[in-house]
Image 1 (cartoon, rainbow, N blue to C red):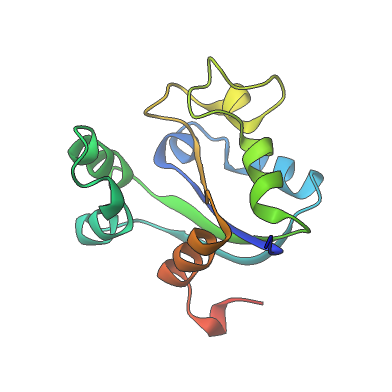
Image 2 (image 1 turned 90 degrees about the vertical axis):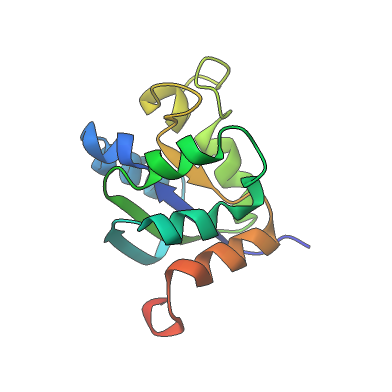
Length: 139
């Protein structure tokens, strides 16, 4: 069953390249409401835990290094059918394959430096949101 909330992170490349405001504008323009927002930097321990599902994959170490290389913006977003609609808005992981007008087509550098994370399921959206925010930080 689809829920009305999803989780996103604007990744270090998006912040470093000055795209945070433009990406947030796209998110709001697509009808999402921001229910929680945090500008922070992941520690190595946090990044390893957040991406532990990928621990056995060859890119895991590089992913952890990248995600701790600079600040991120974490957010919980709300909209009907939030996960699916946000996945459409961000586009394919590889910006070369992303649809025109998507966040990754507009702002990602590569498959590895792809500007934004979006939860891939309602269950993961809830888990990821709780990883970054306490109940008191979600409105």
